[in-house]
Length: 91
Image (cartoon, rainbow, N blue to C red; front, side, top):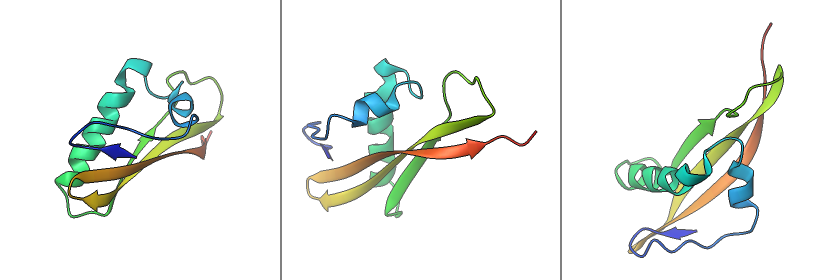
């Protein structure tokens, strides 16, 4: 959960570690800010971004899927969810 006004974020201890290997560590908060801005400037209820692994080393791999949705409008509060999506390459 993140508040756009205060930039306070609350979550479980697994969110940031799940992004490792998919988003450079120093860019995670920037991605969250971008997704939050996109949510505030669209009529969509949810925003999703797909991140392939930074290092591709086999034909079956996972992508990181980040999803965000607005929970409260004033002040804007959003919920961010990180999940893994299996991807298989066609050879």
